[in-house]
Image (cartoon, rainbow, N blue to C red):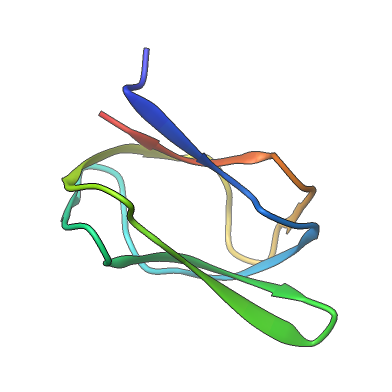
Length: 72
């Protein structure tokens, strides 16, 4: 089971995935960009860690609270 899951804060479309499975990230690193209502919302790591799995694909539509990234 993942230590932590980052969920989508809004409904929108994934327009950028800045990390990949197995990547080591630091707090503040860009993870994913979601476009909603022509605005880009950047999601950043809120902790240091390793990305266990990216749960979405580029151009995928997501809903609020959909899981996006699992930390190991």
